[in-house]
Image (tube, rainbow, N blue to C red; front, side, top):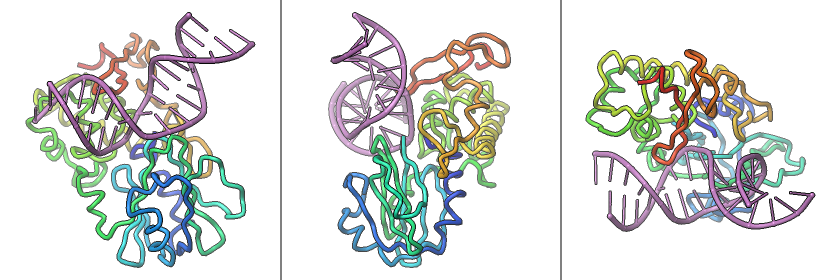
Length: 270
DNA sequence: ACCGGAGCCTGTTAGC
DNA sequence: TGCTAACAGGCTCCGG
């Protein structure tokens, strides 16, 4: 599932192919892919727009355009983006495609159809509710403390809450809690200062490792070029139920928290 | 404030 | 062997 490191990998891979290109047309065969405006509006407003920058915010890809609007894409569960020659046959799970002025297309493939495309005047309409970027310089232990402050919820669902911190999904939440030695059901308000620092360090470490390894190809995620990432080979707990903990050798356990599979070592995490 | 559950999807997998 | 049912998961919405 594309989380922050996967989306960052996609953004970096697409930049050379997309920046400076003008979008000359939009094709879509699954209207619900287009969150807003309507598919017809999108097809009317987007052509002629030139992409001036591509960045990531949380798990969103943000395409800055020369005009006043911003194109935003969320890959959700199974989204995949690639720039390919327009005359190549489209994979059957491609439901939206953006024709470019160089004879190529930005194709949005999405088997589970959860992905979303937005074209908005103000990016904040879509991104405004997101919490801070965990890899930004100003994401300090103190800021993490603020984001968790006062909450009596379990750490796992808190880390998944995009309005608290942006970009963490199920894989990196489990990995961060393991790296921090914190139990996923631990209540946020009980964390001491040292534990908060450990969690801060762990979040940044696992996300940075995920980027360095170009994402985790555990379910459907592959890079724009179709190659797998390498983070799945560095995972400590995620989907390792029953296998020995790499630290203590005891079996990794799985519970459901907030409706999400949660993997942890009951001995190493408290 | 917080939690649980349904819904959106479909390919894979477990179970009979 | 062949079928059905459950499952996965990011996010939103609804009800308790």
